[in-house]
Image (cartoon, rainbow, N blue to C red):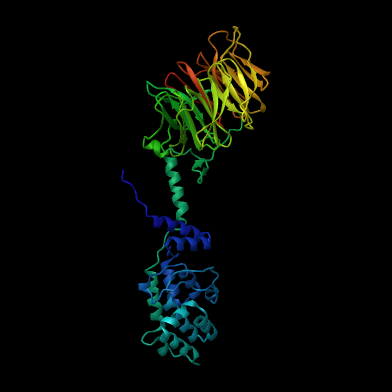
Length: 535
């Protein structure tokens, strides 16, 4: 497909038109002056010419004041006409400085004022306007002739217009000015933006019937009023036969669904269509975000602008989601695979966990290790910040949950969730903030139960599938309002408060993610699919 080229001058003209139509006079003048691009448009060329021919200068001058006219078509080029010059004709345009030549217009006006015996007006134009001041300096004979005509007690058209007439002079001026002006449809900027959005919607790049945040380039996200658990398969996204999703995350603003996969690819999906988001140019060009090794985890910054990803060999990358640009590489974030990544609230730090039994905080700008949390005796599977960022909570395969001071890295609390029904201890897969209380967390360990607990380790509430064998939970997530907890088990089922069981994958389930505003759930497993579920 050939590239459509657009002149920068045309873009500036569209912006100038927007400023003019919205009475942004100062902005219009500044942009026109700095860019040296003139709009040179009138509402109607025919009306403009008719006004010149009829001598309706109160209508003509405000329009001429916003034009830049070439030197070769007018006798002189003048830098500005003072506002009081326009006010003599009851013109309210706030015009400070324009490049246009109107010597012929000014002379003709003076002559017509003399002819109408508007002596004071003619004198004011002659002696108080810059256009006549320039004429006095550069064409003294011509200026003195006008002064002479002004001083007369009568008006002689033959002497004033010499070999021409008032009508012919007006016609000459009208012809000269009309060649420099054009007519364009109104509101071109808004019309072009509207057409672009309609095209994107037609191509399936925008959800139908939504408002659009033009500044951020995102569609306004509707929030579901009620928390309802999904029961219906909406889309199935298939990966290659030798790859599967290792992680999936929705962005906090609800615009993106990202998957990371065993083959190192990081892909951004349109969850409404179930297809890759091709409005992201780098994906349209097949220049995907990529690691050399399997990508085990990912997470968005709070503003949904950045994505952090961690791979099997301890490397973390930070990406700009809208451009696919890699902003930061932490080549040796951990000595073993990265199991989770989480941004701090302000997006300046990344909390990561690893198979190397540690959790760490890295500075995004410096790329340096800022804090290390040591104390677990096995894999650290997951970590989160508390809502105020003062503490870090870690979940480990050593069957414990630890609470840490995020500044000092001191361990404040260690506790174990209740053991499985079959006895013994169980690895803790993940911890989650509980939307209904900042003092409670949801703890998912490898048992058939899931727990709401305090940060001191007390069980507030528990939910169980009732299975002693073969039904241990592998992953969990919480609905936005905290009404439902979703768990996926070894038997490939998900459940919510044991109120609904749903077969979701043919092989082992790896994990799941919930949309931040909608009743939408993404699940992914070793059957090389990611599935989207709705109520």
